[in-house]
Structures are given as structure tokens and as C-alpha cells.
Image (cartoon, helix red, strand yellow):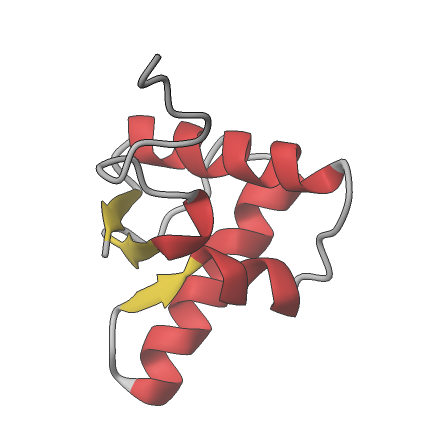
Amino acid sequence: MGESRGKKSSEKTPIQTIVVLNRNTTWRCGKLEKSIVKHLYKRHKTFGRPGVSINDIMLNLDITGEKTDNCLDALRRLEKRNIVTIMPL
């Protein structure tokens, strides 16, 4: 009794997070990681705000279906290498 089915309110979905570019380097990165960093750099250069939502990245890079897991893994690898910062809203 009292069991809730679903995510806790404190857990954020990946769509509700912001990605901020820390360093514009793609050394030893894969194709997807390079395209993510390139998109973040262009976005920051054009609009002046450093944060971009993960949903916006997926829409602009045409990532759907099974590729979404690859994109989220690539973002985690970039965060591990201190190239981007992932912040919940």
C-alpha cells in the first residue's frame, strides 16, 4: 500500500536538463560528440546564452528512436571529460 508507480518528483527527465559548453575541444571525440560540441558552440556564438536543452540538441541533430540513448551516453562522456556541464532545471 502507498506504493507509487513512476518517477519521484526529485528525479528530472533528460529532456528537462540544460547542457552548457565549458571547453570547445573535440580531441579524441567521436562523430556524435563532435556534432554536439559544434552545435553547442554555434548556439552560444549566435545567441549568446551558454545553455541549451537536451531536447533542442536532439531536435537539431535529428536524433530519434534508439539514437537517443547514444546521444545521452555521448553527453555523459563529454561531461566526464569536463567539456560540458549538465544541469537540471
